[in-house]
Amino acid sequence: MNDISVREIFGNAIRYWEVLRIGYNAVLALIVGVFFVLGLPQSREALTLDTAQGIFILAVLANAAYCAAYPVDVFAQFSSARATWLRVRWVLFAIGLTFAGIITRYIAGGLFSGAV
Image 1 (cartoon, rainbow, N blue to C red):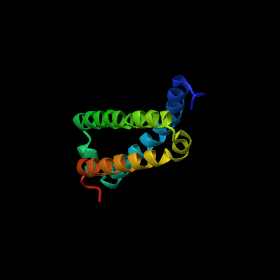
Image 2 (tube, rainbow, N blue to C red; image 1 turned 135 degrees about the vertical axis):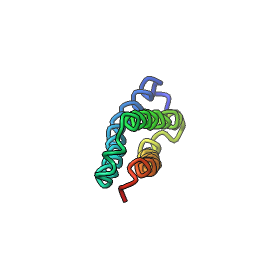
Image 3 (spheres, rainbow, N blue to C red; image 1 turned 90 degrees about the vertical axis):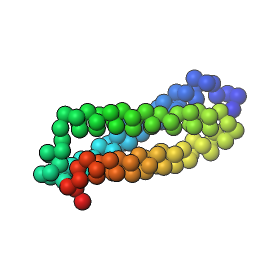
Image 4 (cartoon, helix red, strand yellow; image 1 turned 120 degrees about the horizontal axis):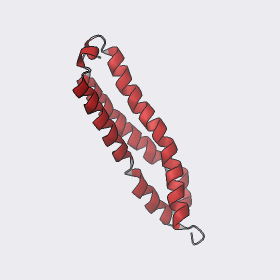
């Protein structure tokens, strides 16, 4: 652990999590898109400027929540369990994505209620 600098730990966290952010956003966008398509034509009527702005705000909040992984990752990398953490941190991503997906499904279902 003494050979690893703070810069390396932060760099490692950024490289790891920012690549996964693309998939995170894609999955959440896919959930919203599926509910929109399944709810057609009623969902088209529900898509107003206010709804679009609300979806944008929720997307920003989802990305802010995604940043919660950073302190956990950095803390774990500073610990003596760094090697193990680097192998299993995908579990944190999977749990976070599942949680965000459930919230997104709930909200998208409410916005485009003609869907399912």
